[in-house]
Length: 122
Image 1 (cartoon, rainbow, N blue to C red):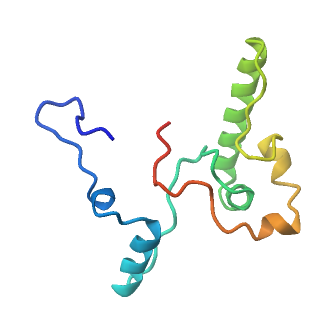
Image 2: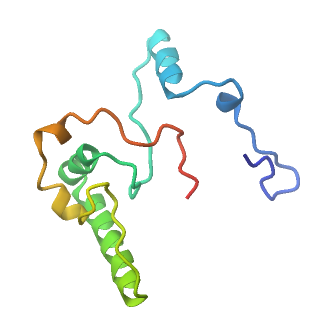
């Protein structure tokens, strides 16, 4: 874990990690304080989103979803020109716009996205 930020007078700190407080513990602390639990944060193009999360983005934030679809498409066009295989933003190994129109019952009940750390180190 980095402690140097690259700025002479600044040092990075990770108090929750240092105290071994994970997402579940944070949620419990927030609930015990009587506060509403905020939604999980993540990058709009995070490949750890569940299909259900992508579907919700498609329905509730269509412009942002279109941006993710365009990014996935651009990456794959570039990879094709380089002679490399495709990459996908879901574990279904299909284009994002296809996966989100084809939900099965199992996918409707996915519990969590794959990222629990709060950051993906991208």
